[in-house]
Length: 419
Image (cartoon, rainbow, N blue to C red; front, side, top):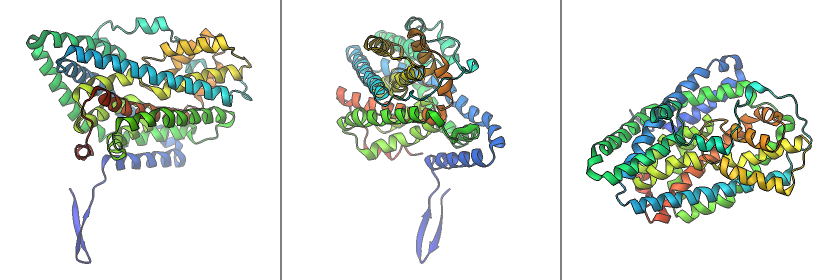
């Protein structure tokens, strides 16, 4: 409840701290705890996991309700098919540019030179490398319940897309299922509002544990690969995301209102998937078409991980350079084509890119020790990659909405987004 007091005869209203302020405060407290009391900070892991588990529990039913109701309510299947095609074209175009940006930056800076590979920590490496065949096999779920239980966003999106299209073709006969999906989506939005107030605690715990485990320590020889990633992400943001955002004709103020809380959550937890519920709610409350937000945004978290995609070729070239291996033009072309396929559909969770990196290293017969070495610099790279991921997720529905001629978010509606 807000309070007021008198000062020199003028009533002044004391504002409550909003969720964004609490998240920032939690981040500061987490850094302080990690630096001043590292042993205590390491014991906070369950608090961070509690928040992440709560958000992950929301994701599956929210995608189910939002995607089915959006597809079934779209009416014109031809228009829906056009939306899907345009989304696919957009994702492919943007992620291909991200790959090219990462590859060219790594070739220019050569982050692996001067680095000596050490023995791999096999316990930190994925047991099974990601290949195109394996990824293709995993697109279709054994069951929807199984996919939801594992939080496999790609499988949930594929199943719900087919179910939503089927509901649209059935019309009134599928109306009870569509009504259930609509109610489920609205209920999940309300649950999201409750869970987001756990965010400051979850963020504080996650940051404290990260800092306690050496997050602010010196990166040593890995500083160059961190610099390479930062440079590539900055170039991609300025040369690709910024022009796309300007083309969408959404104001900076509006974009800030839409993105501030989802962005902070994603960056501080290093998981762009955590930002899906609040970003989806913000877009719809700000007036973006349900048809756009319900279809495009869930797909973004499978196919539009631009920051993660950009990092993969940097990691591969870093390993090759550190191992003293020079990749020729044919090998670089093979790497680029392979990553164009295998980088699609990576789950929006921390370290999901490791499977793809290991698969690429195996294909090029490069040592896996490079992955173990890169893990020690993850704390300096993961949050920045995630930040670019979530910026890309925010820009994509705005660009596609303008491409489709749909109404864009308005300043007036954005005032309701701030909780």
